[in-house]
Figure 1 (cartoon, rainbow, N blue to C red):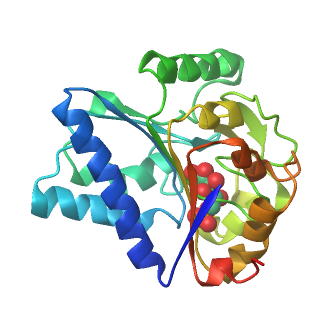
Figure 2 (figure 1 turned 30 degrees about the vertical axis):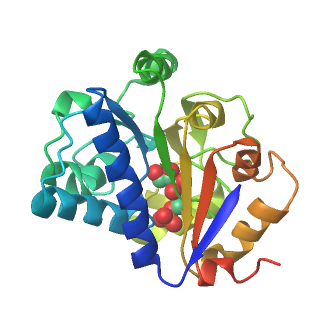
Length: 248
Ligand code: F6R
């Protein structure tokens, strides 16, 4: 992993958005799809804000963009304000010219009996576009990427998982109490993520400093799934000053 530290997460987010926009335009010139793996949560909000600004003010088009979101709670209705569907529409998709059929987000309403096949199909769909050109990631305090909690295998694919207690407690405020946070989720696997040509992982603020240190300086281990990125040759960890403060 290669690390870059910025004074502010706002500025770092603009730089990340510029990289994504550059890739989209490069693919447009070649008349190719640009396949983006996207994250939700607080970390990418400013990146999406900047992409929306570029669309509105600079004419950046998303007509050739195909997206795959990392994860969704399970069970979870798409119209629920806590859903990742709602989040993506609110922060990005409602404001750009992406084609609705090019948007993919794991569906939290799939019946339990069909879930296994649904996950296999999600993985196949990513592969049918030739894999991810770019994957944007946040990191959870358990060391999860996507919702690949500790114990996840480095070759794991899209599947349903149980959320860790710490992850659910971090999500509790948004759900008005931990009892309302779903116990499960659908997530792309570590193997899915690692096949991306380019990965940018972001961490902002003091709360992430400890897990950032373990991810960058610790041994590769299933206990901290983000450490698997140490074996990915084109990953950049983008940090603000606060998130980097424990690094030696
Ligand atoms: C979200 C996701 C999660 C988050 C992580 C950090 O789609 O996959 O791994 O990136 O939980 O969340 P924030 O950014 O809210 O700190």
